[in-house]
Length: 91
Image (cartoon, rainbow, N blue to C red):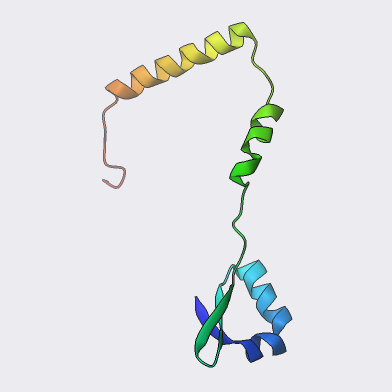
């Protein structure tokens, strides 16, 4: 995070805003060598408060689909329990 004076930000506000928006840069606004505020991008993605609505919007599984899904999960977990762990970086 770079320090920038309030005067500099005021003179070139659009430029700094574009740097935040497109380059994802962050700035600490200072006045008289004293930090006052931050100019930074908003976090990407969904807010936690939106999670219940997201779950509510998902399609419901039928009873047989839910059973099949649970079986698939159990099979995958059993396979993973017996899988050999290897180093992905090893050539």
